[in-house]
Structure formats: C-alpha cells, structure tokens
Length: 120
Image (cartoon, rainbow, N blue to C red; front, side, top):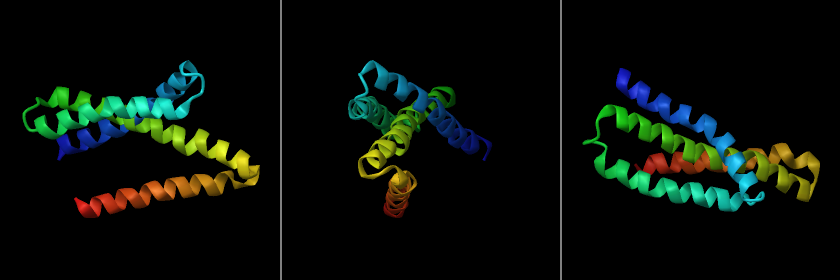
C-alpha cells in the first residue's frame, strides 16, 4: 500500500516540472510547441516499452525514477496543450473563449482517459 502510494505520487510529482521544461524547450525551438510535444513523446515511447516489459524485474528505486521521469514527459505536453495552445486558439476565435476552449481540451482528455480505463 505504501509502495503503491509512492509510485502514484512520484508520477504526479514528475508532471510538475514537465511544464517548465516544456516551456524552456519551446523557447529553444523558437515557439514551435508541436515539435516540443513530439520530441517529448518520442522520448517517452521507449521508456513506456521498457516499463511495460521490465516493471516486474526493475528494482524499486530505478522504477520510481523512471516513473518520475515519465511523469515529466507526460506533464509537459499536457501543460502546454491546456494552457498555451488553448490561449492561442482563443485569440483566433475571440479572447472570451479561453475558458471554454480550455474546458473542451481538458474534458476531452478526461473522457479519453476514462475510456482508456474501461478498456484496461
């Protein structure tokens, strides 16, 4: 029980610096957010494969570090999509739509996650 709480917490903890790292990468890439998200997802895919095939064999400390790092790679694009992209889209259709667009993006993500959990 304690270990499972730690695993869940470290994944979420890893998501926090993801937004800062993603923002920094966006500045390095000249504001091309899609390229930043694609880069982070490209780094994430092999780590997910490693996690899927080796999670039972990994010692707990490397597993926790891996989960924290994967949280960072997921949290960064999530933060960029739900904030900067939503603001850009709102500017396109009118500034008063920012909250609605952010809600649609977050709601779509939540529905997709819920559907994915049903499949699992």
